[in-house]
Image 1: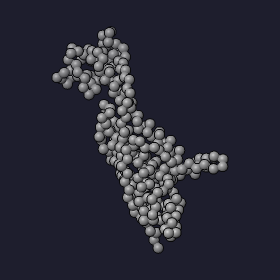
Image 2: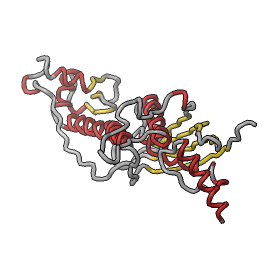
Image 3: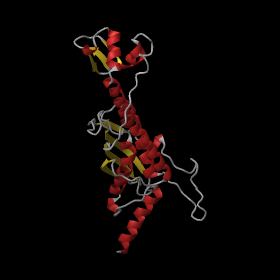
Image 4: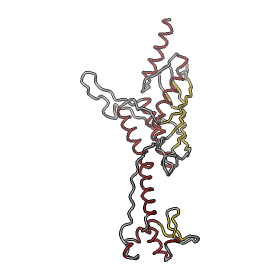
Length: 283
């Protein structure tokens, strides 16, 4: 007799704001590292932008550009990273202007590093939002879970490098699935010795266990910073736990299973099914 399989689909639309990481400490540590990486561009790109604006506002920038272009300072305006002569296509870039201040080809009072200073306090945070849909097949005879499909749509604000965001999302989804299905730090109850200290014992997800992820980007610029950025890649690992867990529980609904502890290993799923059977028969 062929093994009976159950198909279930569960969706989780989760804002990454206010979520608490749970599960194995290894996965939580990677989640914290992923969040730090994801926040690098929104945080540091803002600082770079403010510094550039400070350089633009200072008198030396327009004066150096005017000297290089041999026009009056009043004819200089700043647009898209360049000092432009108003009404013409003549221009000099911001970095070229800074270099000119060091090469001695400008008046003495304009020479020296072109410095910008910015102090920025991110008092209003900007959160990324993600909708994730996971499709699983569960073998009730063995408890084995197969991820059949996974779709994720990330609102990360303005996407500076979409390909990089897709790559981070794929990696984050793999980590989320790994934590949901197999990753666990196991300690000896009597000694506290870590028993899953190597990859021989700590089960990380493998490529042959994962489907081809479908990821999309929804660019809704943030209103809390001038570049419209949000964190990227968080929408992979954070909703992945809920999407996988909800799909599994939905698949096991006909057995009366309403909750499954993570990681949802085949043994835990098998025991949940048989425990539910026993409770039904006991009634």
